[in-house]
Amino acid sequence: MKRKSWLLIPLVLVLIIVSIYSYFAIIYQNKFLPNTTVGQINISQLSKKEAIKKIEDNVHQDEFLVLDSGKTWKSIPKQQLGITFDVDKTVDNTIKKQNPWLWFMNYINKPKNVPIIMTDYNKDALAKEATELKTTLTEFNKNRTPTKNAMIEMKDGTFQITNEVAGNTIDIDKFVSAFESHVKEGEGTIELETYIQKPTVLATDNKLKKELEDINKLTDVSATYLINGQEVAIPKETIASWLTTNEKGDVDLKKDLVKEYVTQLGQTYNTSTNPTKFNSTKRGEVTVPAGTYSWTIWTDNEVEQLTELILSGKGFTNRVPAYQGSTTPETPLISNTYIEVDLQAQHMWYYKDGKVALETPIISGKPSTPTPPGVFYVWNKKRNEILRGEDYASPVDYWMPIDWTGVGIHDSPWQNANAYGGTSYTTVGSHGCINTPPDVCAKLFNMIDVGVPVVVF
Picture 1 (cartoon, one colour):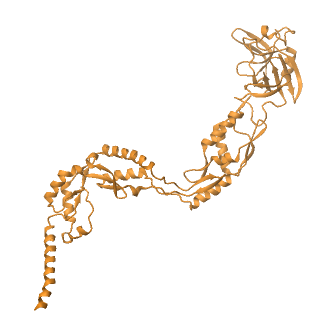
Picture 2: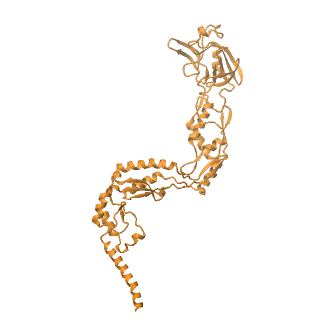
Picture 3: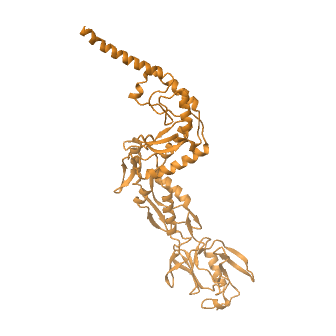
């Protein structure tokens, strides 16, 4: 008898458990399961009607959550985004999806929050919030470790591959784009950690290794210019500082640095802006200002050509840079054939192959219209010209212009033969031209070629 009583106890317990289980399974046919939240609003144990009322009463509290490792980093009221909701549909869908016969599982595994179905949002409000998030995340990233790709850098005088850095900064553009999509799709949360920037180029990348190989080849390129008769070498460390890679991963040059170098080259050597040292007949070395006989490095053109030559890996020796002007850069501006006009001595020499071929006293411009100093050249030769100005018209037999303002060398039969040289220029001087005795001027005219330099100082 006692044994039968003990057998009844488990049966009673099973009946009790089944009864409790069945009771709640029937209850939750029309009520929400435990731990059910919609839009962060707890609707556990409520009927559909009760749940709708509670949600509508508290929907203004619903927030879009930005999470950082699962914890709330920023909460944004959905009403602030102009979001409107379909509460009825949300409640109806939620209760249809729940399984009342598994009601106990909601105690074991807490279900996820169900977002309230969105019907619309405000585009301007969303755009404003996205902009604010960009600003906030920019500050947020300042305290985090930046992610860096493996790259080629110069260290200890050589190019090397530096390893990538797996940081924890947020890819702001990707995150903000995802945030906007989440809002539009009615999601309620977004996780920052999902959008941590990751290195896209690793130190083991074969393409990066090939780039390093190509760059190291270019660092050995030899490059020299020939300017004013002198060899001007581009230092290899300078070329190395120009080397980089473009978006395609190909070796390229930093055009701004190349242009900076070529610009400096011009500032140092351009004869159009720099004075010229000249070994004069009577006064030794003198400094003569720039004039019409000059050249200028053509910066943009030279940058393009130099870039192409360096990247070819062939290098160059004694290259003449691209230029603009009346003469070329490779030789000294004044060689051994030229006309020298010493305004102080009031004397002119014509040197041919380093030797004096002709010399004569002259009369230069008077103090009110002085002869301009500079390195010029005879750019034309004409016979029987009439030189005209505001208050004169002077016929000459020989005319050799040297600048662009009307200054030149010519015969001056109106001058007294004894007036040439000395200080007579102060009283009977020209309007700027170089007055020459007629017989000497005829000889000079026949001796020189167009293009001969004229040094006036």
